[in-house]
Image 1 (cartoon, rainbow, N blue to C red):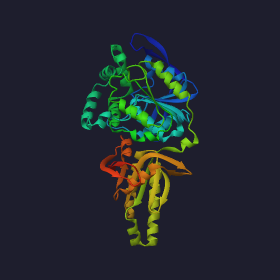
Image 2: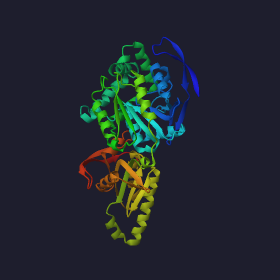
Image 3: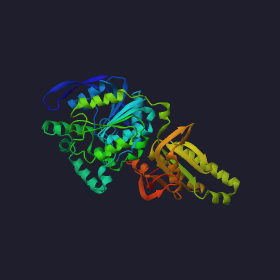
Image 4: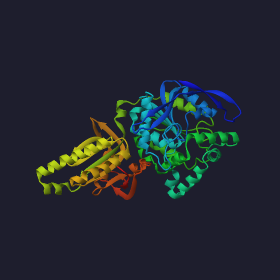
Amino acid sequence: MLHIHLACGTRGDEYALVEIPETRYAETSDGAYIAFQVFGSGPVDLLLMPGFFTNLDENWRIPEIADTHRLIGSFARVVAMDRRGVGLSDRFSPGKAEPLETHVDDLIAVLDAAKVQDACIFSSESGAPLALLFAAAHPERTRALALFVPFPCEPGRLAGTEDEETLRQTRLEWVRGWGDGVAREDLEGWNPTMAGDPAMVKAWGAYLRSAASPGSALALEEQSWHVDVRGIYPSVRVPTLIMERSRVANWAKFRPLVHEAAAKIPGAKLVNLAGRDALYWWGDREEFAAHLEEFFVGTRSATAADARRGLATVLFTDIVGSTRKAAELGDTPWKSLLERHHRTVRAMIGRYRGIEVDTAGDGFFAAFDGPARGVRCAQAIIEAVQPLGVEIRAGLHTGEVETINQKAGGIAVHIGARVGALAGPSQVVVSSTVKDLTAGSGLVFEDAGEHELKGVPDRWHLFRVMSGQP
């Protein structure tokens, strides 16, 4: 359903009747509400999830954005959404965000509400980590993936040119100018074709205020400092298109990261578009939409073979000193203790939406669709088994897992098992991939150094989980 909205033009000097799609809400498993709209028609379903701060209704008041959306809607049934924390979706409190896996749940809720089984996914800028994680974890629901000027991680942190406290102070100054101040800086630094128009600065400032509160904007920006999804590139096995505009003034520091993504995501295609603007709806919109249509309309749905492989977080646990404990107790008491241990572990795995893959002796192997849930499950198991008079160790890794005959395998499984073997009593040890994907979860990690993992190439950077409520 469409409703008519009396909207001012970008320059504030004209009014026009604008057809705005009905805004609907998808309710998530944790009770949040995610706003989305459906418009357009075509042979494919397209989930539109821009990474910048957005507002679904206000999109139709900026003529350039509205025109871009009409172009996309000419070849696809579009499901546009505001991410959690921005626009018409539930907002964040200052200093609080949610981990990427929670946002993945939001995407699933929106696709379900829009009755979409497999979608072409489009995202941009800071939305790229979420889109990549979704595509890797849910290939059965991802027909293809397109990213525009993606930010897979924060280049300043990787280069060591900025520390976290310095960046935080910079962000605080940035958010104090939220609205017109940030709009002016954004247009001059990233979108120069619109920078010389004072009315556009005002319009863009109003758009930003409608898209996020200062606290919510700050929470999302601080979360992006910790996110790094480069470790999951090999697990993104859906058709992938990466678009950039190399003439964007501030793009030089991001370009190596974008080219790395194109090189390491299997079969990814890199396209350099004309223009100098970082946001896709400014500049040459027709060229952008034409590349998107050519790529998406020609893709296919995932096959059964594709669906057998996907990103997962694997958890391995075992009882510390189990042989000694069994000898102390004797066969019958030890068997009884194991039964209570198994019931306790299985209860925790179920609570955190995990799947028990295998059990051998006193050890468990489980898989989770989110790394933070896997870590919190490990923490909960450690606490829950202590009254039994035993301690466990736990290790986790996130990587591509292949399921054959309901059994999980692949190099990620071997890495998870080796990581678990390096944990001490009542310790949870994780790979750097797990750490980098849990930003915003409240989990705190301690550097455990680099290690060689038996039978696994290269050295691996590991971390101990120090805190964070299970």
